[in-house]
Amino acid sequence: MSPRPGDGPRPAPTARALAAPRPQAHPAAPLQIDVLLDGLTHPGRGLHTGQLHWRMPGPFDAERFTRAWRTVTDQEAVLRTALAPATPAGRRTGASGTAAPGAGMPSAAASGTGTPGIAVHPCAGPLIVHHPAGSVGWDALLAAERMREFDLTRPDPLRIAVLDEPDGSARILLTYHRAFLDPAGAGHLVGSFHRAHSADGRPRGGERRPDLRDHLQWIASQDPAPARAFWADAAPPAGSATLPAGDRGRPTHQRGHGRTRQRLTPAEADRLRAWAAVRGAAESTALQAAWALLLYRAHGGSAALPVAFAAAVTGRAVPLEGADRLPGPLLGALPVAVEVHPGAPLSALLAALTGRAVDLCAYEWVSAGQIHRWSGRDPYEPLTESVLAFHPPRQEDASEGAAPAETREAHGAWEAYETWEAYTGTPLALDARHEPDGGLLLTLVHDRTRIADADADELLWQTAALLRSLPAGAGPATTVAEALRLLDGAPVPLAAPRPGPPPRTLRSATTPGSGLVCLLRPPGAPEDCYDGLAHGRRGTRALLSVAPGAAAALTALAPALAAGEPVVLGGYPEVEALAHEVAGRVAAYGWSRPPVAVAATGRELAGALTAAGRKRIQPDSSGS
Image (tube, rainbow, N blue to C red; front, side, top):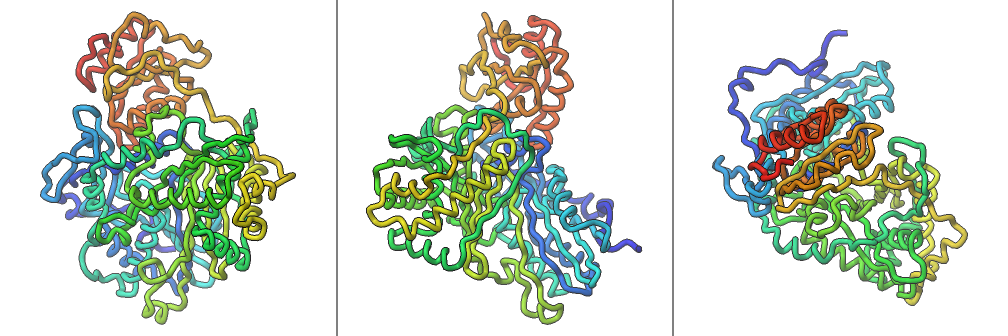
């Protein structure tokens, strides 16, 4: 079979690309930092890879398809975006190309290493791979693309796979990384593609504005003080119930992610909507109330208990003109905390959750990582461990992914696209969306290392049972305890403990922003093998000791990396290869590569850490 446009490896750079100026870098937005850190701290799990697919009727024209995507790539800055070398925090690139202070970022002096940069390249080409009919199965292609890691330093945030069908049609699969695109943004790109395809790939207009650069500059211009003051009080308090499951006490012995579904019929969905509306609440609030009941049931007794989960927000309801149509990584999830009183009316819980939803509207641009830092909580203790997303019925038009009328007439009926949400490091993600017939589809994605498949099935069944039963069994005076009796006889799902022990703090930082030294324990070494480094030695940086393994080290580094603080890796010679592996992974996600210090004795290691630290920050009076 002869090669087709877009087949195989990317072509060599054109003269235009080679002559293009080096792209300007902007500091990554806090939400992008959260995504990068989540992927960094969960190596090898294919996280934050979203997918979108549809079928194009035949005969499929590969050349026209490729021309259309080239046009879209030229017009959509996000498709030419990649990570750039770490940018000093507290500085952003203005429209004139000069650096200006960013009110929303910590100062460069305080942060040291800065944060990953985002660069929009002037030239890039679509990454298209064509698979002949029968060369690969559809499910196998979906799974392979989902698990294939992105090189985030290349301007390839979107991969396009084309699978020929025997009847001449083609199945189109878009795979994207959530550091650069979210599902709504990918949908806008599909609309742009349809318009370009209907014009035979000929450009119509110039670049879309605002684009990702405009959004990054808008984020950097926001004053975080009001948000910090609000979330310092509104963040979930310590001791909140964060998983709607009891303690399993042992591992699940399962791996990867699982997915389970329940469906409310159109009649059941109508009753739920009407029941919530009478109480001044939305369907999404009813879903949150059911989830709050399950959180309380798994951990509560007869007393009031705070519960916490995250609620997805589009990030597009911000005062930036055109943000609602902007392809980019705007989707976020903000913590919702509410106290559940068993003797209080269920209507009071609905009212409290409605108030929380109103509060979130003002802070869609804030990230969960920022909120965690502002809360003053332990950085290694999660604020939430589940996220709820509710999608209203989708209104299809050209910008949302439906083909333009002239294209449908010329090429037959185009299917609306379908999405496959990205996996994340959150143990539970509940997605609710309306189906075309008015039914409500509930999809629960679970981390199988924490929640076994049987427990996830039971949990979603109980969620759907509450949503079906509350409209008929919960009146105006029904209490929380009475509502929970609807689940009498149902078992409480179980969850495995969080993996690995938290880092062992040998010395706390004495100066904010001074960074940390992370010491990797060799396999089989006692927990106190590095304790002597902290005894009798003063220093401004935190000194941590972590369990063997890359995941433990990356988790320990995450809070400092999020704040742009300098970090150093070290230990005895047995951990040298692991330390360099961890340093390389940090660099692959956009941060500066941490220095590594290795020595055979405690005294030599202290000196090596001193030398390594001086490469990154001002000399520390003690060394380590």
